[in-house]
Image 1 (tube, helix red, strand yellow):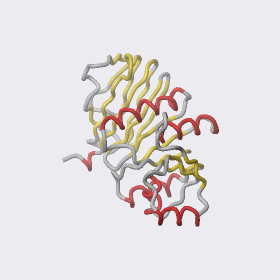
Image 2 (image 1 turned 120 degrees about the vertical axis):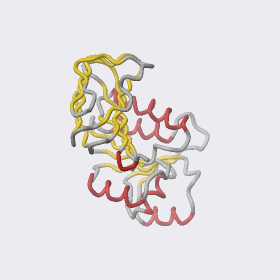
Image 3 (image 1 turned 30 degrees about the horizontal axis):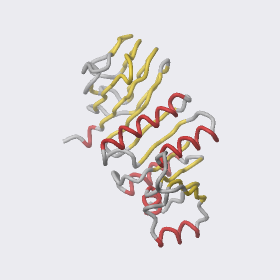
Length: 219
């Protein structure tokens, strides 16, 4: 498992720390300001990628002390820090689970761009998940079957991405699907509800974004 931590402080330090200790990733990458989130959690990444435009002196002292590897890039560059990390992962690792923290919330254009960049990982058959305390976002490329842990009452929105999602079957939801087709710009997959502790999604063809909004975080 590979974990990448971005710079958006959308979650508590405790949430990040508990998840990383449980996951025990084989590679932990910090993106620019994401290094501060990890240092606050008393966790040292294996690699720090970015232009270091947000770096502070005290961070650098701790980074040098912990001997964290650094890939430094110019501030004015063609690729975002996340794009550079994705290129590094695809070049150096075989397909596996990719967990992304510190990337939900903040500017909408950044979130949309990060989804597009993550598609490169999905197309190389990595399993991709954006995580936060309030919501998880999964990228699913057919043909594939995926299971998601849930609580009863959690919201699951299934959104076709780029083209229709075909042969779509969903188990454990209030409004089940059975080899259905979801088309872009339709609301049929929006705001379904979990009725079991595990939701299973099967897709035969196309791309799907699965939004899992946790019940405990809803108003």
